[in-house]
Length: 117
Image (tube, rainbow, N blue to C red; front, side, top):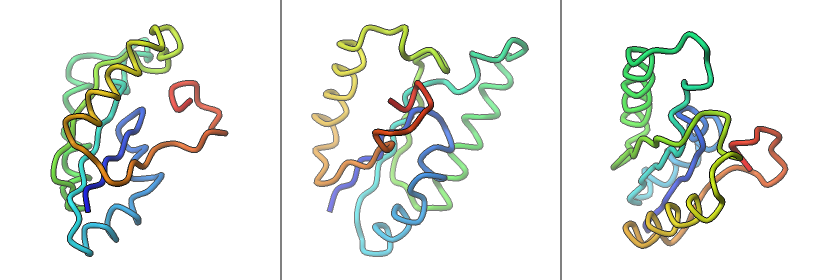
């Protein structure tokens, strides 16, 4: 089975469906994670070092879960509503075309975080 997890920020996939990811991996599935937003650019004091640390932590956490590949996004943190929806949709379509998932896991539609919508 081929699983694609699409999350807005690093840690959303672990907090939202880390147990499901681990279960799929235990069953022999391929699991790829795509994080769409950078996760730090909305902070007034963020730096390139902060982004590097966050990305390394995301890779480490997903390695523990056995994730096959983690794609780190560059959409602006907590400002995905400022991006043309078509651009986001095209990006997601590209992920689907690349990974050809049987199952896609993502945020709940009632999530209040604007980037999760």
